[in-house]
Image (cartoon, rainbow, N blue to C red):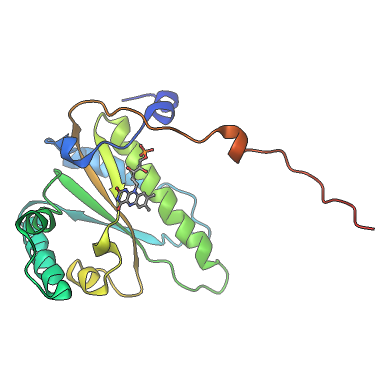
Length: 195
Ligand SMILES: Cc1cc2nc3c(=O)[nH]c(=O)nc-3n(C[C@H](O)[C@H](O)[C@H](O)COP(=O)(O)O)c2cc1C
């Protein structure tokens, strides 16, 4: 298990084609989802849920999403595009759909519920990486298309936070530039006195 300091300092997304078998075991997945659901959550609403896409169901959903894309676009998909859509849930050993179930609440702002799904997604990713696996958080059109959501069993009042692709990384990915802290961190200032 990678220690927390190293994990936070070094984690980065693994390109999806570099995510190979094996996926985390079922016992590891239980630990990973336990970590993913251990997040700040104002009001203890658990305003998120997780869907595992893998195996034959993942393959069949990919085929149906390819058909849906074709219907939407009104013409046959090219060979490469069809393969891409069909392999949406099989190009990594496991894809976790993270769904926001945030809704209006008499006390807890919906915005705070939405923030909690981001925290859950990031905890999921860190828990995956801590165990030596790799992850990549993407969305793409299927996250925003109501017909695609219905195919994936996601209600119209739910939102897709992302699809987290999970597997064993091949090569370590090179890093990418990170923000200059001076541009994003500042001391609070007092308001200017107005005359
Ligand atoms: C909500 C969300 C959705 C994203 N969707 C995509 C996507 O559809 N396609 C993509 O290439 N990257 C997407 N990204 C960015 C990837 O996660 C990207 O690999 C990542 O930002 C790289 O940074 P990292 O190395 O720190 O993980 C998304 C990121 C977030 C937070």
